[in-house]
Image (tube, rainbow, N blue to C red; front, side, top):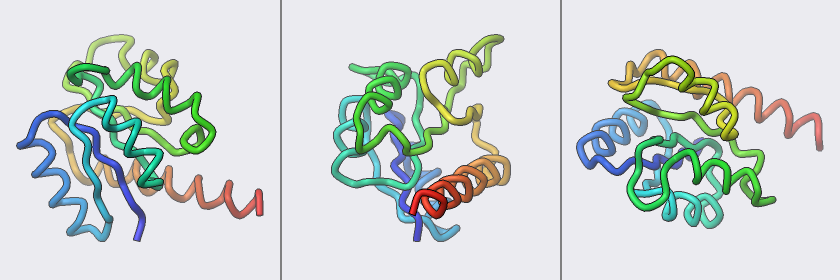
Length: 130
């Protein structure tokens, strides 16, 4: 069962998305801000991180850049989640180290496709490195 770290400060979004992911067979652990997300990424060892970009304390941009600098988390796929679907946001997310980008409100089928593609890619990289 793949483990997903959901970093999201909005309780309603966290609850809705985590329940839907669990129903799809994922284990979900949650953090409410970027600092907690970085800490949990190191202790929980998720297979993938869903990172809200607009977070209190440390935003998702900074948290993702920090994760990329930590050996234990630098290869964990990160999908940026943002309600701010402005021109250039996708490029900004990729430049911060995200592997993909999705907009809110979340369309679960589209997000699941992205999650599954990144998990397959990660499994392929692990098999090639073994």
